[in-house]
Length: 543
Ligand code: SF4
Ligand code: SF3
Image (cartoon, rainbow, N blue to C red; front, side):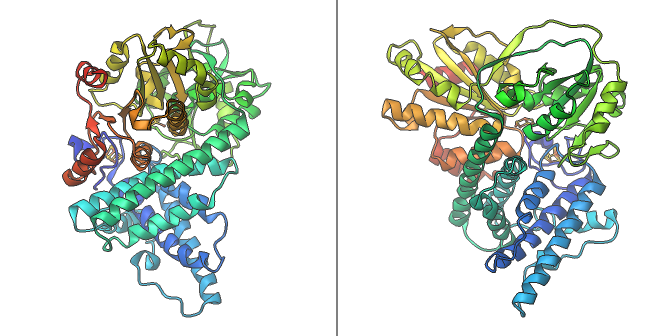
């Protein structure tokens, strides 16, 4: 196998025997076969779209298929094989329709002629033949950019999938999946500058997709507002919901009404508490557990059912294997997969388990400082900056992860001077989300902007401040301190580069898929820097 798409890749180079994430060699190969088969579908869809022949559900299918291959989403060989076969079936149906309308239509590209083998083992072998290195340029720098685009595309796919589940689609976003997969199929074409342009276009597509998801979430569930979320528990039966998909959470809340079950959020589901139409459910109580990488230690202690709606899933321990469920793109062999949001098995399991024996009071955290909540106080914030009471804003956000070195983010936040404000988002916040940093004239110093896709909200805040101060975003007293782990972070980084943001700090390491020359290009053009120590970085930024 060869996979280097996430931050915890072996020796910061590549997983070649077995994934550090728990992904087996055959699963990695099947994921590559899935990407290859989606390229075949995209190549046909590209031509068929000119004839208006592409079935509408093709685009969300492609998005969900790519999402399946994102880190810590799906580890189930049979499920992934099913995706490959569905992609090929869709491709062949579309090809037949296209040929009926335009006889003589022909394709020279390999993915269009790909015929999946009968067995999952043979299909994995085909995936090895069409691995990410075989299906990319022989030029190391161009290949690095093509892999960057592929990984960014997986992140865009995750966000587009969530938006489409809420009924929100956008032609630009739909068409971009086809465009990018067609580009990646023609990997022997174009030079370095062509592919740099295409990588920044992935950033643009991700920006549009995060905007779409922001609209979808806000119009469906209401404008998020600052909300206190308890970290304690209530006596009684319990379900824990993890991941990013708000539609799944809403369906589960509906299906558990009057069942005497308390629902808790986990990981990236925490910001859900801020949405009016979700927090209106009285049995959505609080947030339980910490970041995704602690689940194998924490989940055995949860006395109810657990639902994983998206990443990040780790190998379930025997002690809770019977209690955990997956849905949508997520999968683990032997773990029940909920279809069509019929959460009956999850509810039955929760009712069979003991639940919490007694109420436990604990501290709480505040969420819901998305763009509207912060911009409602824009005038006050601007006044505080002009009066010298706020000297600097930091956005300390991104993914959390298991490797050592991430204490940097906790220490950075702890050491940031008392006249600075920390915006945060995504699961990296679990390093410091429950710290009491106090407030500056009523403005909390720690502001939780939401999930990783709410990077859109953070960008809107930065743009509004830059307009208010009459300076460019790069001239604001604002520094981005980013942590990355999986491919959504790659997509967001491409968006920030597309928007021209400079002087960001990224850690804990640079992505292994950036070749030295590509990394140098980003450093030279955007002054992207690796994190150092909190002391040195704070001193340098605030100098
Ligand atoms: Fe390795 Fe990350 Fe790929 Fe898993 S997703 S196999 S840890 S690089
Ligand atoms: Fe976290 Fe897995 Fe990336 Fe949405 S839940 S940010 S790592």
